[in-house]
Image (cartoon, rainbow, N blue to C red):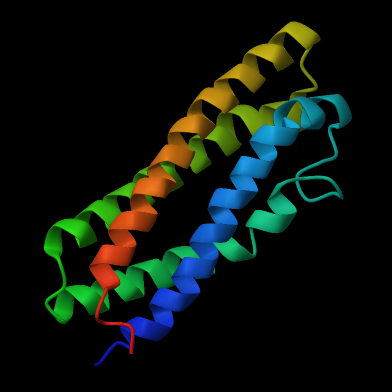
Length: 149
């Protein structure tokens, strides 16, 4: 089966940009503190999950398909492994933050001190996630170069 690397790479690029800029926006407006103040519910208006859940499967799947196609086409193996590993780790950070911070803020309505602690935890991990997504972007671009047909 031949994978159309270029098509998947374009879709992945849009998804990766959405992921990066969405998390950058959340950091700038301090979504963890806003969420703790409002506690809108996981899928209620104002919840970050509403704009990430639809894009996440497409982003991860298209990234995987583009990298797989590039691997089969003889792409830069180090760049492919770097992009795949970075995507997996960033996804793991996201899952960890949703489970340990977001759901705690949305379900438990913690006191102010606990909300501040959770917000700090989120910002530290998000900074790592943003740095990883930058690395992923450059590695992904290199991994799919000359295969965007």
